Length: 283
Image (cartoon, rainbow, N blue to C red; front, side):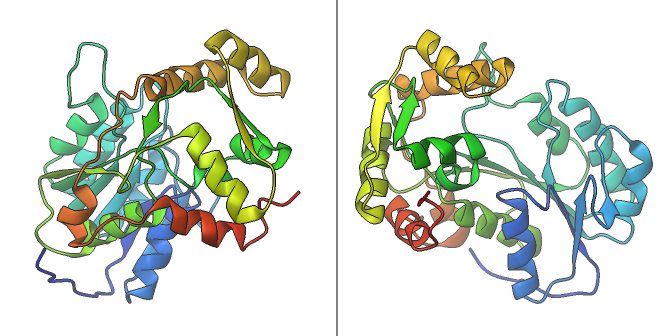
């Protein structure tokens, strides 16, 4: 990809700026000399998908925006209205975080949220990552399982090409600041697939701790998860996602990182080694 990146006083809006990808996007933009406007529900720039009064101030003077939707069932509705407003206010580029595994049962590839961004009138780029490697250290439920020494998941013997959140952020930064990414839907994966047991073994070796994988049925997982305080609705969602891993529905590699950045994606071993060094996996 040919770089035509420029720095300007016009800010780049980053929604979800405290999330796994948003905070990395914001930090990476600043490191590259760009002005960043971080927007969260409680931050200096307040943003709420369900309070349109917060939209205009967030968009004022913005040249590009990184979008993370509300994660609700109706997320496409405010996303569509916001995308159109952004284009009307002169925002040139919209980069939207979607997901590789969010496909509707009928098999339609372009989800409502993705369609909303595509039809906004601005240049758009869609990011469709696989499971984040960082879930094992930054998701409270998964981290608690690592600390307890057991990944009790209903993923069977399926595999997933875990992607590093830093790669997602770097692709987002490129799409926000460089030419050549408009109209692209990048599927983002790591360079290999692993089963849950293999990930457990990697973390165990890197930390010197015992960590095993205990496969559960969906019913067993729901009882296990809710017994540990997880909301039943979220446990059901995880069971659905775990079921897709169990059948290796998305257990294939994609070339989005290579196409966007001109390099191979980071291997999960790099994430595991570096994270082990932080001590977060030691109780």
